[in-house]
Every structure is written in structure tokens, then in C-alpha cells.
Amino acid sequence: MLNIALFGPPCAGKGTQAKRIVKKYNLAHLSTGDMIRKEIAAGSELGKIAEDIINSGQLLSDEFVIRLIQDSIAHSENVEGFLFDGFPRTVAQAEKLDEILKENGAPLAGLLNIEVPETELKRRMLERAQIEGRADDTEEAIHNRFKEYHAKTVPVAKHYQTICHTVKGDGTMEEVFEEISKIIEKIK
Image (tube, rainbow, N blue to C red):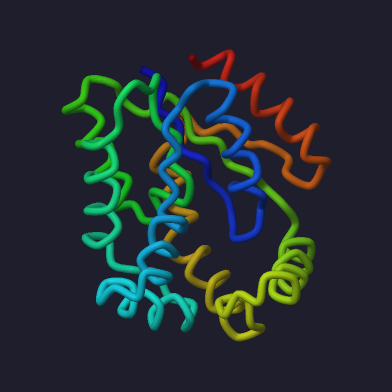
């Protein structure tokens, strides 16, 4: 079983690359962002709570996100592993993921860290806000997301330093995917 975490700042292209990775390697795509957006779209109580937190640029609690991931792992069948997209975002989440995967007998094989210059990330976010109208892509929310990312998420890469692989994310989609594929072929 191949378990990989896709890592990087907001708007680094994780979602775009995740679609290609899961197709090529038959992995279950566990995107916490997608899971949460579904709850919000459904108008569930959980979704309403999540929406308020996300729109302010803050991260959801570790317990909330871990529960979503555990449920998804438990209900996944006929896959050759998992691609974690947007998870783990804190060291506490990383430690819990390690525990969950150890119980399933297949630890995380690699953390793919997509790096993009911050000026390019901000440009992408503002462009996405105009195209998609996402409420969490306002100037203030963007500032808060970067602050949260640097304070809480960057330490996750250190937690996984022995299996962390950096990918230059400012090339074309094809160039980035080619680099990711080379790394996956080495670690699988």
C-alpha cells in the first residue's frame, strides 16, 4: 500500500496535481478541503461551523479534521493507498496520521512538498477569488492563511524530514507532475 501526503501552501497546485496522482497510481484522494466544502454546501451544522472558521482564515481543530480522515479511510475500498491532500496541517495531525497508518500496516511513504514563491501564490489566490468567488480568498483571509500556514503547517515538513521531497511548483502543470511522478516511482 502506498500512502503519500501532498503538502504545500494555499494555492500551490495540490488539488490539480492530486487528480493526476490518484488516477496514475490508483490512490484514494482524501482532500480535507473537498470534504469540508461538501459539508458547507450541504448546509449541515458541521458545515456552518466550518464555514465561519474558514472564512476568517483560521484552521479547523485537529479533532474535527482527524475524524473526517478516519471515516474516509475506514470507508475506502479497492485502492492501492491514499493520497492525503491538505492533511496533515499540524504536527498533532501528523502524529495521529502516523498512528492511524501504523494500525493499518502501511506508514506514510513520502511527503511531497510543493514549493511556490509567495508572490505567485498570492497572485493565484486573488485570481481564483475572481473566477470562483471563494469567500476564503479575500486579502485579509489570504494574509491569515499564510500566517497559519507558517506557524502551524510548516513544522509538519520537519516532522517528516526523512521522507520529505521538495517539488518546484512554479513550472507548468506537466513539469510539476513529471517531477512528482519521478519521486513517487522512487518511493513506492
